Length: 115
Image (cartoon, rainbow, N blue to C red; front, side, top):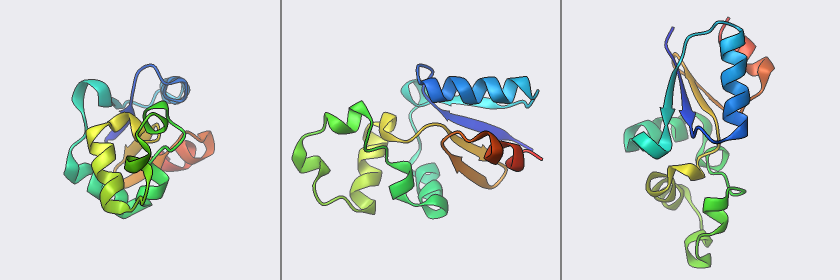
């Protein structure tokens, strides 16, 4: 089973999730949004599985610093455009476990997903 974690290295939640995976000796690949960006097709797949509302982190500094007109009238198309332009607006971590997509870090969800 291939596991990929998406996020940014400076995120505290990413650090906790990485410690959890490593302490359970679960191999994974880390994809840093800042260094590697995110592909439109991958984001579309995530949106199809979990919804754009779950992926868009409205509490992020990046989102809060957007001009009001960019935040107004959010829909799927606009949210995806924002997340592609500034992937740090995507909630972290996003964990791909096979064909499953987990958003955020909940140890019990990780435990279930990697069984």
